[in-house]
Image (cartoon, rainbow, N blue to C red; front, side):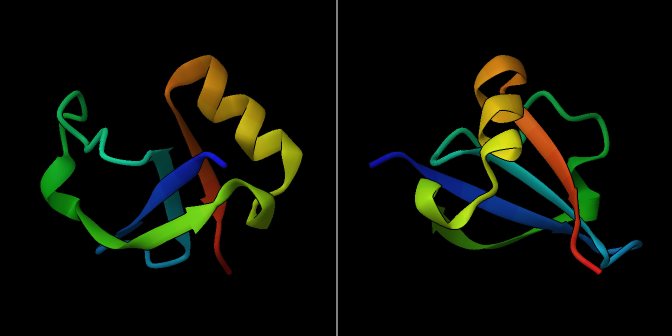
Length: 64
């Protein structure tokens, strides 16, 4: 099963960013504002988030 890494924004803790496991944030201009918060299984995410990650390489999510 596919897994995804979750990063939280240090300035806006209610914003999460998911990427494929191990992909990191190398293409993100403000990557220093994001902190790794763990890895989650695909089954733990809503299907629309998974579709966004697969289509765009990442997905933002309101964690509030």
